[in-house]
Structure formats: structure tokens, C-alpha cells
Image (cartoon, rainbow, N blue to C red; front, side, top):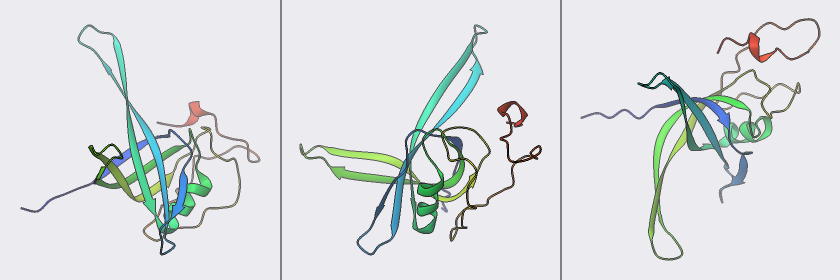
Length: 149
């Protein structure tokens, strides 16, 4: 039977990206994303839950995420679940699921990220930088109330 492993997330970074390099000099960036879910409970009260997800990207995409994202910045990403397992220093077996990022998109927003700056460089298998909503005169940011999501 064929399998299908696809993850799509829209959320905010929970911490600044941490860039490192493999022995063969491939860039690796680790970061966290938080997504929120809101619903109405059976008693009519508004409920909300937050899901925290560890993410990892490689290559040019990793360098771009490290350069242009910071804690609080919104991101839309696509990837696949990866299972990591290891033995801790105390001898116990540990494991975790992580999203390996295959594609990402910059989103408009004011959360913690850098302001206007140089245009990001596309990554191999990298991101689709979609234009944001129309801006007024000059380069003033678009208010969050004007963003349709």
C-alpha cells in the first residue's frame, strides 16, 4: 500500500531559528511553530488550544528562514513528518516527531520579524514569496485588521 506524508501549517515562530551546518557544510535550521485552534464547546463557551511543533529545514531554505524569520513571525509551511529517536545520557530511549520543511511562504504580519529589507532569495525547492496585500502610500505596514485571515 502506498503512503502519503504531508503536513501543512500556518502559525507563528515560537523561538528564533537556530542555524547550524552538517559536516559537509549543508545548512540546517531548527525552529518551532505554534498553531491555534478555536472552537465553541458544548456549553457554548469559546475554547482555544495551541499546538507546538518542532520544524527543521535544510540548504538554502534553511539559510533564508534563519535570515528573514524571528520569534513571533508568521509562516506558512509544507513538509513531511519525520520520526527521530535516540538514547539519552541517562540511557533512556527518547523520540519525537518533527516536521521537515519542504516549502514555505512568507506571510504579511507584524509579529517579531524584520521590517522592510532586501528581497529574500528563492531556495531550491524553497518558498513562494507571494506579494502581500496592497499598501498605501510609501512603505507603511498594513494593519492586522486589513489582513483577511
